[in-house]
Image (cartoon, rainbow, N blue to C red):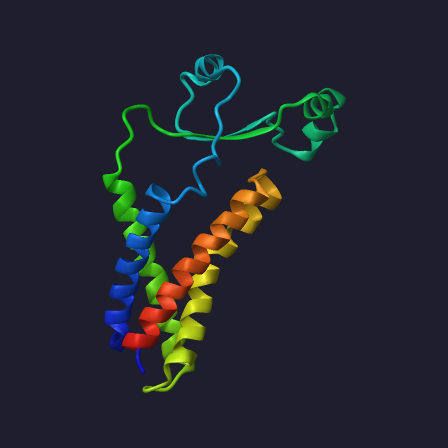
Amino acid sequence: MTITSLWLPILASAIVTFVAGAVIWMAMPWHKKEWQKTPDEEAVRAALKGCPPGMYTVPNCPDQATYKDPAMQQKFIDGPQAFITVTPSGLPTMGGKLVSMFAYNLLVGILCAYLVSRTLPAGADYLTVFRISGTVAFIAYGVAYIQESVWFGRSWVATSKTFLDALIYAVLTGGVFGWLA
């Protein structure tokens, strides 16, 4: 089995997971309350006005020497602590994000095909192909969010919901690969 011989499961799994992601994010209820409004949104907006797009920390502590300063430590104690991503101003557009997500789904399919092609002979049974491609897909779609919870304060509840998404994508990807490989 070669990676190029798996072009159909790569493409089909990308399409299926793209559709599943659309359903999960637009129709299912489990991600609806992950993002909350700040107590004074207008004050936050005013404070961030003029910030160029990028990632910011509050308080910002660029090195260990700064961290040792008692005034900096007090900022952490007093709070709040935040990780902020500022995106460009303007009405949000979905086109580029949808294209990027589909490209990511293709990348996951390629990674699955790579491992399947390197570990299994041509004609491998459905369940074996399902197991390998599904595992790779689960890792690709879900595991990275653990470090977001560990280092950047992402809610563990949100991460567990993302694991549910990843499991759905993994089952679909494994199913497609098992069927078409």
